[in-house]
Length: 320
Ligand code: SF4
Image (cartoon, rainbow, N blue to C red; front, side, top):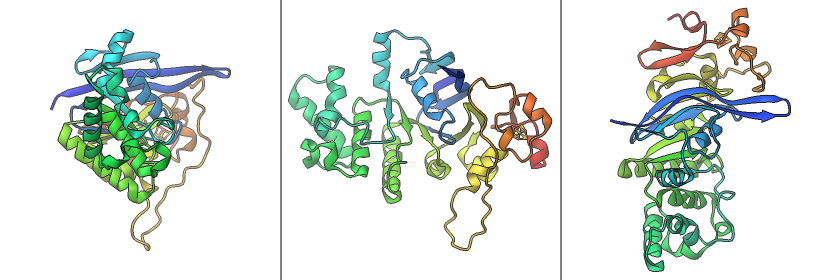
């Protein structure tokens, strides 16, 4: 399998009145074509900003982005337009991301017009109806408006719009978080089917680990702009070594009503992402924290094959 995306030491800082906000701070990973990388963390951990920086919706502060073997860290507007064809996004809130004044046919077909990909109105309509069929939207909804659909069908519109240009990579930014649980499963299944059929690569961003369990090949856990643990999906659900990942996994509800409640409740203040110091950013909430954690930043360390953790005391905590 070949690498499709690589980010190296990617950083995105925002200047605020209070100082520099480190939204994304030194993130490095690769994604192979046709695979899904799940990016998980609480809101405010920088995961959505990371996706937007990769798509150049925010300009990076530092670091490198390589897509299909080409360094795209700095690109001209013309190159960016060409790239957008191959790199699409599905947003969290399908309603907010769809223009309420446009019919579904026009929303889904708009990218075809922007890229001049159809010679006639008829050709555009044919392509739109084909992609609507692919995502399970009835042809009769072509002339409907977003407010006439339920959440699940609105998200299908978002997926159809992302697919119509036949992209290689899709950044899925909390694509099912706003949906009912039963609809979530339908959309996730649809996304997995589409990935298989079209060889799509997903960056799947979510705060909910249970959502990425089945769809992700690899998982990266982020905390305050940094990666704290990464491994393949099966491995991370079997063995979590970072205290923050342990807490995230423990918060997944169990299906049995009499299952023991092992949820780890995190206490303590979340470190400010503004003007951060060289320390472990999780230290104020970590039950294992020692003085060293407050004045030295841990590095990602490989603790098992292809399993990386950012913690000074990972071996001691886990008896490795
Ligand atoms: Fe906890 Fe220290 Fe490890 Fe950070 S480095 S996760 S504070 S033990």
